[in-house]
Length: 464
Image (cartoon, rainbow, N blue to C red; front, top):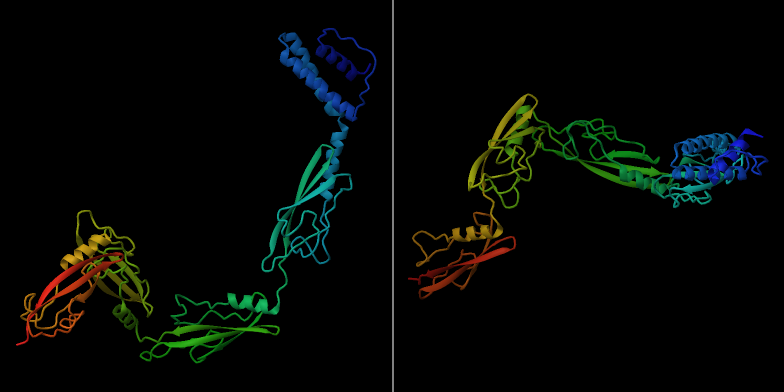
């Protein structure tokens, strides 16, 4: 009797509850067949169940012995499973995608040939990561109008219980462009590159060489409105002499592809020459200013500054420093008044440098506590007054009056007269009547959406 059959009979006795081992005959399960595989699964499952219920150490030892025995026997004789895995592996290794003539993985323009069966019998199914570009069966390829598309196509190979996957990365090329489309794309991407710190509104040195070919194959021809200042290839720039002023030069590009053409122009400001670095610093120092936020000014800073320039129009490098950086930062972007403080003086110092020459300009700022819109209106209304001519007052107006149009905290002030035939709305015209006349001047103080009103009672004296 074969050794594996003896083992089977012994295991069967254990499963059925017997303790003696005695068996004759054969088994209908043939090694390598599906019935044999089923037999292996069933006997191992039964032995495991018996082991879980056993409470006798000797019985447990016997059951474990036969579990190990059958695992080895079944594994050694499962030739069909091993064969299927080997076949799938071979089919995976040999698997290729078929392309239309001229196409490749990196250049897909037409349908693909995706095999459904391997040479060793594997069944192959396919799945696309982007069905809008490549269908699962590869027969439909849709090309985008402007951009290439990366698509992952995955093949699943299966034979029996053996299964593997293989992926292919493909690039679906964009559709071919017409001459007009090529020209439009090349014109849209066309730009001028500058050297150093130059830019379109500040040209002091040669440009980087102007492109003569677009990325889509268009030819580019350049024309200068003043070639004596800026050459047509951009490599020569001659600045106007000092005192003659800056010069505007227009560079025009004609972009052509086949019969299609398009024009694109660039405006450049070529800066006048300066005799010395000191001249350039002096000019930039004189023009230097601070861009305040909202309605702020040097006497009333309540919010961060909008901009502190880092370069001057004549090429000066500008570095800023604050006398109180904890209140107003060096770059002006952070403002924080100490608690309980109504206002504080802060000095912003600008150091302007060109080459080896430097100069300094100092700005004195008054940082004030931040008020709400309503508080701002109230403060401005309380501080509002009418300016009288010499010898005049509220009870005796004989001359034109001054009416401020802005409060000290930035509110806008508008005026209206109760009798504009005697005092005009702006106070600049005063017509004295036959008898003393009372005129009310109504001031509307407004900041953003908040407003309030203040009335001044004035007596216009009769003409003598």
